Amino acid sequence: MTDRSALSPACKLQQRVLRTGVIGTVVLFMGASIGCTTAQERGEEGIPMSPNARAYAYFIVNGMVRGSMVSGYLTHQELPALLQADRESREAIERNLRNPSEKSDFRADQLLAHYIGLIPKGPASQ
Image (tube, rainbow, N blue to C red; front, side, top):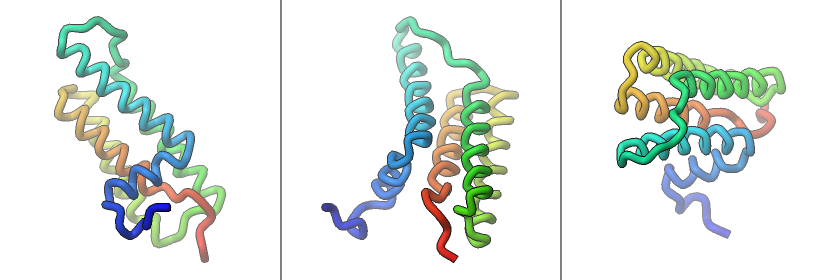
């Protein structure tokens, strides 16, 4: 078994995200959207991604946070960071819907991934 303290923060985040099936599904969805963009840049045909896909992903993540709150998985100390991540990701998605670009797509994906990483995976220890 790997010593968790020796892992980089990125590896720790990746392990945390991939533990939960729903979160993994959202990450795979976002990764597939990036892959579709790359294929389009090379001139390959594919199904175009919906302009609202990131908004759908945001609503899924927001629902996961609500579920964590209702289930008692959140502590009062975790709320400020989650609220800030929620606001930042929502604003990035709104900007992306108004003025879509590769840069705004990437930024929205980054903020959604950060938001997902903040969601607790189990009951809060009081």
